Amino acid sequence: MTTYLALHYWAGSGREFEPLLPLLPPGSQLLAPDLPGFGDQAAPAGFDYSVASYADWVAQYVAEHQLTDYHLIGHSMGGKVAMLLAARRPAGLRGLLLLSPSPPTPEPMSDEDRAASLAAYGQPDEAEKTFNKITRIPLSDAQHAQVVADNLRTTQAAWEAWLQYGSCEDISGEMAKIEVPCRLLVGESDQAISPTAQRQQTLPLLPTGTMMAVVPGAGHLLPLEAPEEILKGQHAT
Image (cartoon, rainbow, N blue to C red; front, side, top):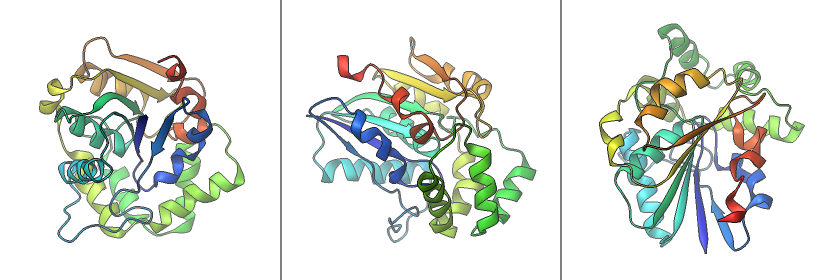
């Protein structure tokens, strides 16, 4: 049985991947855990919220679930974590699908935007503004409420650590170690990390032959905005 292990975006949760469930190839399964500090997942004692620590946590999750044949899906922050884990060449990993990932190099975020995001923690009005910024294809009322709720239940430690440190980390030196096939999917109207930034900061560091596809009209939340694009072609494999 093929397993898809999906890692969510910053200030989100594994719930964002629920639209993929009816689209899975026959005989496969989807695992989408909440990462430490997000959703319902508390951070372990001493967790430092670095990209490496998140990769360690996912590796432990893989071991606990005895995954021996799986594909990694990484969205935004989860994409950066997925890339570092893939660079470790874990046994059983068959492929890497990156959805609007946080680049291996520091995210293209101005100091002003970073300060504004830090100040927005826990504020419902700001969570609404974020929703409007990161989505372009209309979502259902339930999905809208979910995105806002996930934003507001993020722990302050996880929120601040990613903005101040994780998003700024440079893991580009590890990227040459990735050997599995990769695919990069981005939203045409992504205002969080633009297609141009992905072409400049992410695509050149992925394995030779990696293709980048742009989803017309989509913003940053591809699993919710364009789930059918994510698993396109998987039924044939």
